[in-house]
Image 1 (tube, rainbow, N blue to C red):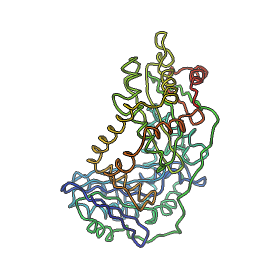
Image 2: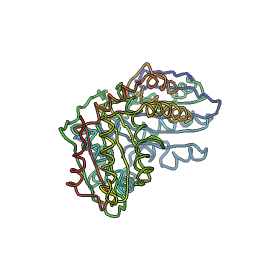
Image 3: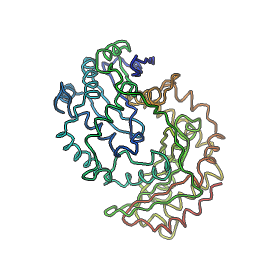
Image 4: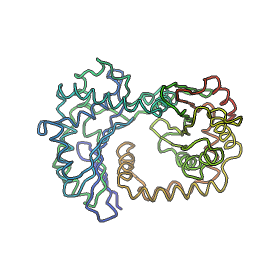
Length: 443
């Protein structure tokens, strides 16, 4: 599966990987290096997300949303978009015979959005509804708390969008087209494709589209690094949300940035803690004590730093105690203490590698995984010597040792890196949570 890269004269980056199977399918991800972290003090928060919505509202040649999306719908194509901390991404998966016309349509959407006041007035209500939906989920409160604490002092601390951003006079429509023209330029963009079509064929389609627009404004340096605020002890958040029967529990730790060598050992640790049915969280909380139905561990990495999060939920009566025995939170604290003092076992080490290798092989079958990986590596982080997705395990994980895994535990699983957040109508008091977490000794 050959990877080819190209930079057009206007600064637009292109990365293509051939589809291993001979299927007449193409996946296209358009990355724009404009996300929530680029919203300066001079512009309203949530504007990157709003611009993403407006790119679906029509252009001169396709005046309405229906004029744009019907071409995708009538062919069964997948069309979506997302706004992230570091970028906005427009996604299409379609049959090869429509790639040429869809690239033209995407370039029209991205470069020639009309920003009609009537459309903006309606869409602001749609975006608010999207945020209302998110606010119904306790996980969104946990995520906001986690980022606010672990990424304090950087633009990552703010939500991508939030109900609090949408006051009646919040979005100033006159600033939207200005920021749109400032950031939606070829030099801030890249196209990642996975296809059975050749790289040269898709490159030709790109050259015949509006993606060849020349830069309209001076180019800014977006490769900024941020240093998060450091703490000397764990940070706590308790949110009492009415109507939430369960109590949601998050224990997170600040870790390294994207691409750091420790990232790979941390990802194996993530599997050991909560990645499969024989993981520590599953065995301790569900199989041994019957305290939870679901538990997990996640990692996330950005340009400034990252985090590892342990997440679970349970009946509020089982958070601290369970019929005279330790509840979920004390068990999690004891798990962390044991991890630091004893490290991982040889069996866990072997399982984590086998699990990652197997999962990675399965993920290779999903074109979107390859497409976003290539885009992030080449377009977002400017890597030129890209390790193909199918070679990630052999390149980065096969050589990780048990000692390296134990070292990242000692380095990152520490009280000063820790954020604890509980959400629920009947969540325990802050004082009782602090008392329980005080048993986390760290090193």
